[in-house]
Length: 207
Image (tube, rainbow, N blue to C red):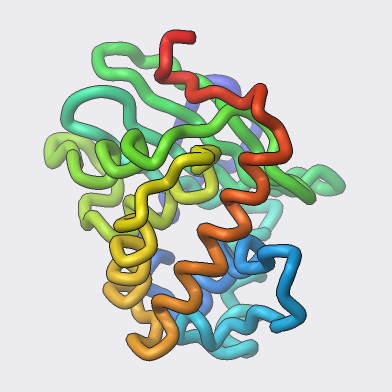
């Protein structure tokens, strides 16, 4: 797999990992801390256990294979998530793809924390709800939303967002009785992060 700007990285398609036990806790667990609650997030919030999470982390963070998750959109920009497994420089990079253009635009990274530009809730929903069936990548709506969720830097998330997010979590295997709780923790963390840096603006806003 080739992506401009990642010529030195051993990129591999990662979409098959989305259904593996341990994936979603690896991907989202760090964002479940809202800073004001003593409750410690655990993999079980995502339907996983510690062994699942540990086993899959070895695959996700393998320096010999950098998983790539493609979220192509039918109209407008799509997204790409890359596990940048450089020795001593591990992180997750978030890129936008643009219709009719071969290049990609890196807009954010997650190393020990999130840096870069983000998207609004409505922009995430547009990407999640408009898969491009003609392109390779994730087509199901729920994992599309969850893969792009770390890009959310919207201080005005609508009230319906929590229910939409809980539904997506349930679809990928989170327990129904805790999905709403997990969704609230995720949104609380993202809202707190957005409030810390009001200079963040959507790269799609034209501002």
